Amino acid sequence: MIKVGVLGAAGRMGGLIIQNIVKNGNLQLVSAFDLTKIGADAGEVAQAGNLGVPISDINDLGTILNDTKTDVLIDFTIADATAANAPIAASCGVNLVIGTTGLNPEQQEIVKGSITENNISAVIAPNYAVGVNVFFRIIREAAKYLADNDIEIIEVHHNQKQDAPSGTALKAAEVIAEELNKTEFVYGRHGKAPRGDEIGIHAVRGGDIAGDHTVLFAGDGERIEIKHQAHTRQAFAAGAVKAAEWISSKEPGIYSIEDILGFD
Image 1: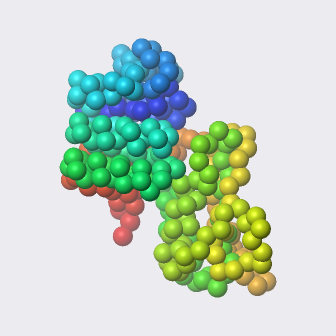
Image 2: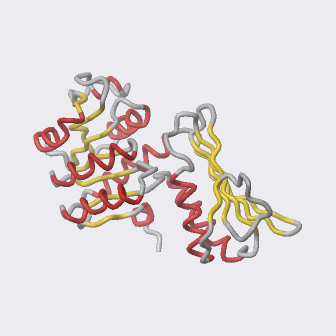
Image 3: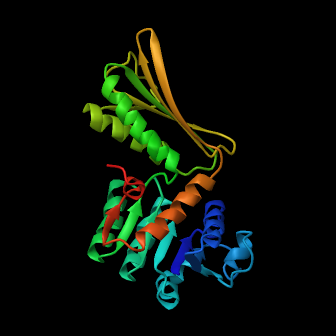
């Protein structure tokens, strides 16, 4: 059995991840961490049944990871927390699955540096849904043939999302920019008129929307819209658990969802 830990275990995403771990016959939840509901059974909090795994204080991260011999730690929290906790987990020899978005360049360097320095394996991705990663492939291919179109990216998420624009929208922009050698991005377009050769990126927040992403290629007399919609967070949780199972047998290094899916 692959021993798995979950950061943010008392949250909605953490609970879904725990539910998916329980359903996977190759994984076992052995550690759970949060700032709230400390001491409560992680399975009961996640509505997955009593698992005999208490939610531990995040301040005890290193000690608990070592005591439980956790193999892989799944982290879908916030940027500041990931930048602080990833180096601790890495120093314990624990592999990582990171879905946190909104990390600034310095935080990214801290996380990636700790992975390399401690010779562990990690999957880092802004979105773990299989469909989103196929979406990235499709928009890259579309960009090859629609290079002279105006390109806009619109993302919509629930009103509690911590970062804007989303990591998925930024990844979509990166994919297109790499393909077309574009360097200018405009966020929200306030005060930006007329349009130039930039990629526009727009964030909308409201309600409980799990995540919608649309790439608009607008030309003269026609347009193409390529869209991915996540109906629930289940797609992200299932992908993260699949990544935890996959990374446990890999050589040290930093991997992507494309590696898991076997994309060229």
